[in-house]
Amino acid sequence: MKSNHLFAHILFILLMFSLSLGQMETLAETLIDSPQNTVGKAEQCTDGTSVTLSGAYSPYSVHLIKAEASGHIVRINAREGQILPANVPIMEIDSSALEKELGSLKQVLHALILEETILKKNLELTKRKYARYLKLKKAGHIEEQSLEDMESVVNNAQMAIVENRQKQAETRRSIAEITDRIKKSRPSFAIPLYVSQNFKELYETVVPGENLSRLLDVSKAKIHLVFSLSCFKKIEHRLKKGKPISFSIILADKQTIRAKGHVEKLKVDPDNHYLYSYGFDLVFPPIKDLVWGQVVQVKLEL
Image 1 (spheres, rainbow, N blue to C red):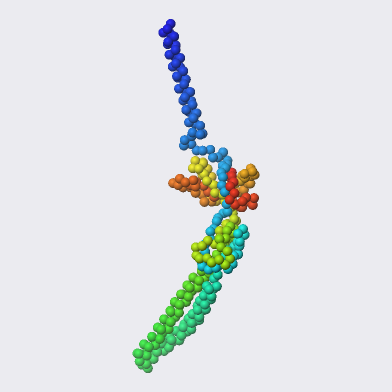
Image 2 (cartoon, helix red, strand yellow):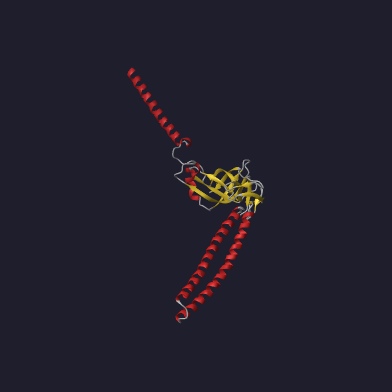
């Protein structure tokens, strides 16, 4: 009886041990498949039709304007919070001395051009005279020295024109340089820009390299969106530069603004392990209800 009882007890222990191993394996499998413990599996960033990320509502571009000319500011055409019209200088640096110098150079150039006209006529007359000297020499009416002297006169007339044209070229270069300096004293732009900040006031003196203004291109808006690598791999085939894309902007109060835009500056750099390796600018028309710099959620419709 004792041996039978002992055998039954050993069998019970082995059975319980077997059950425990099975439970442990089941628990291990559960932990491995758990999303919190996934290794090497792509994160759930999209439901298949959309993906939601956060980003700051920003102007399309920011331009820090630095002085390229020296002098004091004589005019400011747009203040902070205003729109600077296209081709209107943001500030005008005194260029009266340059204007005076430019005027003098233009007068010099005009005189040189008139002089060239006279020199050309003189050369033409001299060449005719030289042709007559050749005929006289053949007829034996003049000596060789007279002909050589006439050749020298022709050469001098030609050299006078060459020198004149060199002076014209130098004067034109000086005019171009001063014109460029005057242009740089009046920085303007081909598109309207919003004046975010003026660093200088009227009548202040500036030197090249000093900050003048910070201007914003608010003709378009953008939100820079950043993806994790695993998320990016799931949707990269749907992101093409310039491709139209529909999206919604979700505000803190859950208000939703629907809009359309396109992808710009798509950045994919597998060798760069920084956060911004995978992302792009979502560019779209400005939305008047949003404030520049406001952080919003963006739901991309894929």
